[in-house]
Length: 95
Image (cartoon, rainbow, N blue to C red; front, top):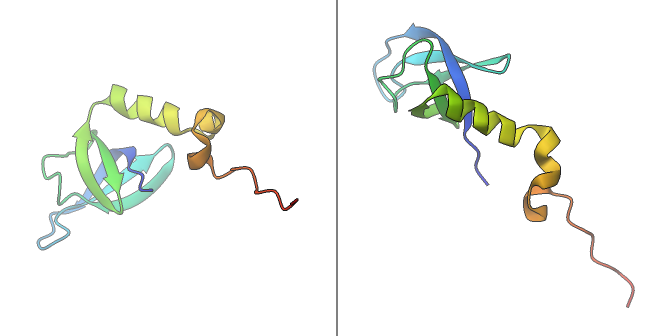
């Protein structure tokens, strides 16, 4: 399963050329990471972006970003389908 996470662009560090394009610093609720902005060249400081595998894949509005964070917070894991939680019941070994 793949997961893209919303974050806020807080800095653009380079106007890089090549496959990685610009490099931005994105804040994920206090955790910061350098990511490539190559797939979202329109993204700027203050924009909310969806990040997957070190690349921004789309620009989104703040409401959508916050809704996504609410859904993926650990408190909500009990509401997720069993197959996604990883706590599937173990198979019985009784015969």
